[in-house]
Length: 367
Image 1 (cartoon, rainbow, N blue to C red):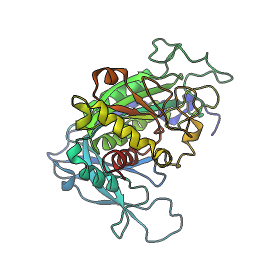
Image 2: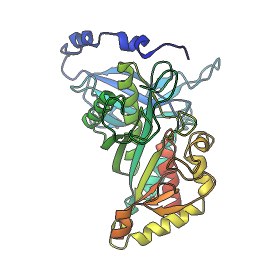
Image 3: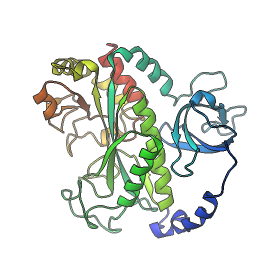
Image 4: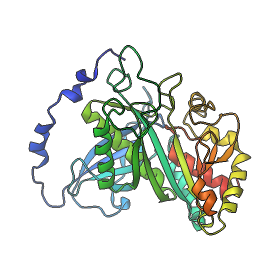
């Protein structure tokens, strides 16, 4: 990347107040601006485009299928990706009746694209509906300056060692809180079930949590929350990275710790169901590692080193209140004899559809 600084970001230099003169212009009744959002051919990045509707939709089924000219096809002809609406959210940017639309991607022949993991995830969630699975995902991420350097870090060195930054307060401990708060509020307005936020162990690194949600909803919500995070940071001229190890060396990586429970786990004596599920997970560790990052483990290997509150990528482990294990049983769950477990292996750039599907296949479908 270029050596530009944050102050040189084109977005940071635009006077955002001017937009307000036009954002408040009245529209005709029932005119809706819909922003279609989808996962592109990388399986990690999001794209969007807008269209005008002449009605107020009440369901994704009301919305038209749209198209996008492919995923990195280069000179290949006659290739289009079709955008199938699957979830609607309120638009925190335009407000009023305007909406954000989460979309699945399909090929011309009706088959899902390679990066459409939602279709198979939904099929598995439907098979497991009687188990009433709940999920909560802790999304860690890092703010970067326009030059790719972590926000607030010295340009020719490093900040002080980790310790005072996690849940920190103060200008010398946390960077980017304005974006975090804007994102938090925007998610709640949109209808995304955000549980909370906090500063993480590495300066410029943060976390928000989505859930608890039933089944596939947690993945829909997380993808749209990621979209809002990138979109809001764009206005500040700051870049968001979901790289699971944004800085080499003795700095914390970034994960998407996934909390899981079924109805049986939440009932009295549920700890025994938790133990059964963990035993099943222990038998297919390698398969889950491949699913838990979009590069089949090659990204996560930089993070899951056995240091910095991570387990080793090579070994499956479990413990009570132990953040150096693959699976953590919270102390309160162990004491109460029921609740949930935390799978700490998914990387920050994981596809939550794939994570949810893999976990349910293992613990509910015994696959």
